[in-house]
Length: 135
Image 1 (tube, rainbow, N blue to C red):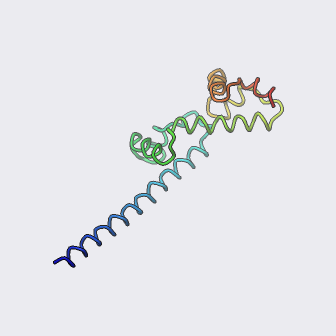
Image 2: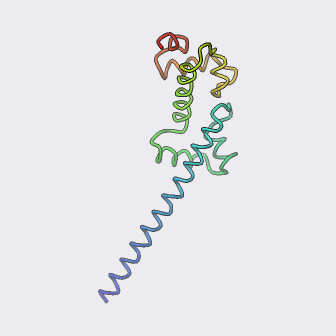
Image 3: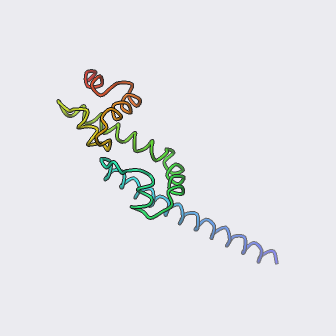
């Protein structure tokens, strides 16, 4: 009886571990797709959790948001904003005469350069033009 019990417990444990490994891999694949989608569509004004979940991956946005936060440690919107600001910094550094409205348009802020400047200042502590002068 004890040998049978030990066998059942060991088998159940193996099944649970295999299941966990399978679902961990599946979650990572989903998040990898989300990150690729963000990188490809960073300049698109429509880029949002709702858009990626619904139109790109056909998933529930709430579930995807929780999964993204769990795996990356960062909310989807914060991740997108951080990535946009990192790209803005690189573009300012790389380009001699880049205009704020061009940055806004290239980074998904569309025709709202004022909002882009506000977000940039919140992220870096400088306006885009002030940041350019510090380089």
